[in-house]
Image (cartoon, rainbow, N blue to C red; front, side, top):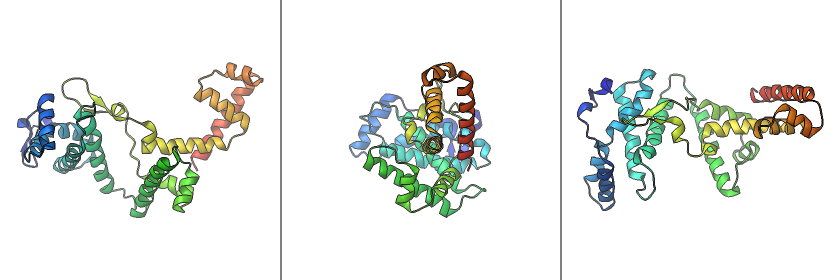
Length: 259
């Protein structure tokens, strides 16, 4: 943290307060009861959290002041929406919101610009997907989303791909002197993540292009964890045939996903 013990946005980061869990709870209760000063105290008491998060974006060439201000917006949103009745630490809840705010800022200010129309298509697809999940009670297919938006399937996949920013699941995003919080710790529902959803759609679409036997082999090998010998015994063919069919199926899937 030594790098950030400087003036950022007029704040001396070396003198930022640190709130205990008990103090945090008292302030949230006071905020709920209408105390006008509680919100400001919660913000000031959690600025170190923002500093911890923006360290992971330090190599992007962005001004630290800008990232800090954007991170503070995410912090304020987290404070305003945090539910004290839920059994979760505030930092666990706030970190994804701070990251999300910074990533939106970086995405909108990326020198490799994603066109406004492409971003709009991606966001409309995500909204439509959420609406269909609520309506159908299951993950919608790419075709269903395409029909709902009246947009070609490949254009939706391209738009969603364009707004993704892959990161390592093992990248630390917060460390308070104890165990660090990694990106993977913030993944609460993998099916709800935009990037995993896009990947799942691509995999499901590519599997549908395979023959019934190839689909069965892929399912048993990669979803059920069976060996080629076990698959061969179950289907009634040789292990060499399973190996050949599996290889051909994977090549076909890879070609479909790269289209």
